[in-house]
Amino acid sequence: MNKTLPFSKTQIENIITNYPTPFHIYDEAAMLANAQKFKAAFAWNAGFKEFYAVKANPNPVLIKLLANCDFGCDCSSYPELVLAEKAGVTGENIMFTSNNTAAYEFQKARELGAIINLDDISHIEFLEQSAGLPDLISFRYNPGALKEGNAIIGHPEEAKYGLTEAQLFEGYKLLQQKGVRRFGIHTMVASNELNGDYFVETADIMFNLIIKLHKELGIRFEFVNLGGGIGIPYRPEQQPVDIAAVSAGIKQKYEDLIEKNGLAPLKLYFESGRYIAGPYGYLVTRVQHFKHTYRHYAGLDASMHNLMRPALYGAYHHLSVVGKEHEAHNTIYDVTGSLCENNDKFAIQRPLPKLEIGDIVVIHDSGAHGHSMGFNYNAKLRSAELLLRPNGDVVQIRRPETIDDYFATLDFTQLSKF
Ligand SMILES: *Cc1c(COP(=O)(O)O)cnc(C)c1O
Image (tube, rainbow, N blue to C red; front, side, top):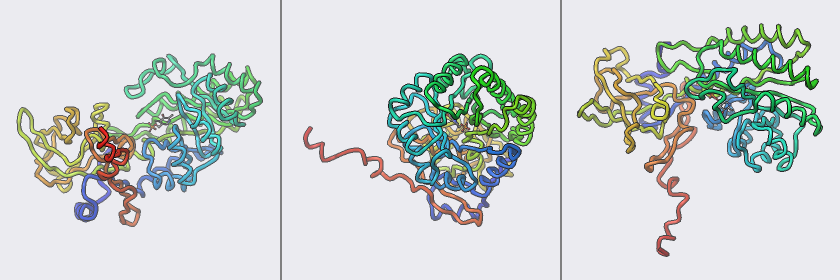
């Protein structure tokens, strides 16, 4: 997949005169075109809905733009619920998929009328006592060894999430006894998965489980939520998931399993984050230093607190040097930030065009799990977020942090007492 930029050299230079680097910039037109494509691919399923996973990029402007495409929100904490509410997303447009959940979080989810997706059988009683049981409940299923995992999410049987199959039967039965009448079911067993067959296989497992639960307990499920985890091509040699093919594969399973067993209509839900926001974000930085020791280092004005994925998972993020895209990539660099951590490197031993001080280096695919994974370790301040509008205008949708933000939780006047 060709890694291009949504702005020219002149355009980005102009943007930088107004907004100093580093910053994340999001391409609204491309993000919304993909959102519409995702929705259109599943148009065969009446009630299809994507609940955008807020944790991927919790900027309320993005949440609102996606809500304008009829996307809901997938939230997992109290502040994420409040963000959804502020962006105008409430009621059953919110999926509350949390784990190890506190009472005040269940209370907020109930107050907003969110769909509650329970992570454990013990949470039935906990929810009942802390917030009361809603009409509609779903469980997160962990298929254990039935399904293979991948590097980010690990193996399902080692994952902390979800109920076993036996617990599902017990859990739904208990809910029926307690008077709950509306049911959904959820699973999420992949992260950054590029093989589309994986999602068709997950649908197959879930549809068969729905048939079994129907036979045993008489439940007519309203929805199945296949979770997030749709991957994106971080590397130029990777291809995006063919979402039309995934949809066609799931449709076939739906006809063979759900329709044939008289269990239609069943609404299909996803709660993708990365696939929705990831490819449309760019971390824009400049080269500020070189250092030639045992390796050639290029030091950027951004650090891992702006984008932690390379340091955290050894993840590949493509780099473009603005204006030098077509030059020979004949110099090998370790591209670093300024944090006092040796894994603060955006790229290791990466062939790049020969860099100069001031070169604009754009780090691709920062739209999901980028700014949102940011942190303040080493007293690093988080950057601004900008939105590139379809007409070419640029709007700042989050200002950069200041030192006063960093100190806001401290009371320096207290120092005199010690
Ligand atoms: C992280 C997460 C998502 C989104 O995952 P992506 O890989 O960004 O699609 C969805 N649902 C749950 C429960 C999650 O924890």
